[in-house]
Length: 603
Image (tube, rainbow, N blue to C red; front, side):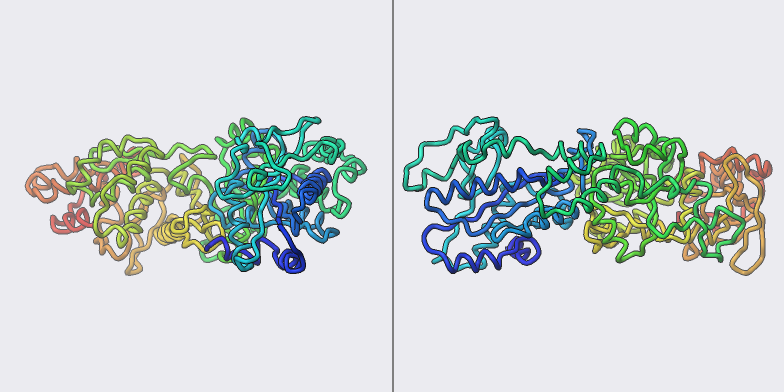
């Protein structure tokens, strides 16, 4: 099975197999799960008590596994509690250290592996261990697996009925209270699969420890108290350093913050040919706008609080992950493939959950779309103007991001979807960035860094193990390159200042066009030069419909009339700015009817 493939990396089985081959009678393996944030001496005491209980029934325990939970479970839980979450890598390492002095206890790393798209619940963890053991031992040598848990968990999950996979359950007492379990026989037969540990075996050793007490001692800086809670084999210095990195703020100080205006080569007077980056911090960075201040404070993201008053700006991506309680393993995997200085932000995504961003709407024909995700999902049904597109257009255009994502999954996909979905995404992205100068400026500021979307999606994102295609990031790099080649490169002015800039045509001639003009059409569209540059371009921006409807233009050409709405909307929101630059733009130079039809048809 796929689970058995993780034997070597997730469950150390060699010692267990060696002990099983030298033992007779009923054999058992124990496994316990939990945040282990971090492990403390009480966890080891619990496993020892469970082992003594089984062996008192004549069942020999040949191994015990302590399995830290996945970051996707621990991170959000700790964030909701307002406490610090150690990364899975740290938690597994502390468990490994704690088990070093034992001849039967081991750290289980399968559950916390970053390759899981979501956190595996305890029944799946137990089933995985069962499968891995079965793959290593012959059927003639069966080993029972027992799940060790506390009384609260036992009652909350109704484990008195047992686990469906046939594993047994060992229940630890709490405050002297023992679990009520089904009647068992003295032989430990099948009815004895639920076993309660007697309080005498614990003698208060479980209740005097807790991970909360460890974290409180760390917060107080009380090293002696921290050491008294941890297992003897755990390196106290390692735990303190890991905690300081996560919660202390001393390791990653606000000096790692890069203000938005100082990010990338565009922050100075350099040109696009200068790929040096004075803001290069040697690590991947994540952009946070001023709007994220409310998110930081409402979620209690203590690691980001020192940066809040300085936003907008760029902070280390690892710091953002830790602040949210997530592992940095996926970031490290992405850096192995794409480089350690990539950039990203929620503004580059089409759907937003953790961070807040109001997608800029745009017009397509006479219909306004709330954002790029709405258009992209609708294009699954067909091209602009097709029957499939128009049937759903009004509903999709006005839907919210997550709502339209769900609607898109219910559409009957066009036959050529796999071949054209990248083109459809790029079309939606172009309209999104054309509609908002601030977004274009943000995208240009990331040059020359790679753009990487770290998420579980292995097509649009980099995946959690770095093997994803990252197509969204690649398309945005392509769009960024187009913007720079079209005269909208580094050194763009702030909003409100719209001077003219000399643009360069393919033949080397120069023509004036607004610096704030939307991106030019790709070269492969073969758009006539007179339409791209100068007053003809301004005419398209400031009043395409009025220009085309003048006598002798669109009204005399029904083909143009049909196509005009498909071209106009991308520039509608910037019409007033363009008109201010060139008040004559709406009335000159038709450039010939054939040229107009070609351009509009391409768009």
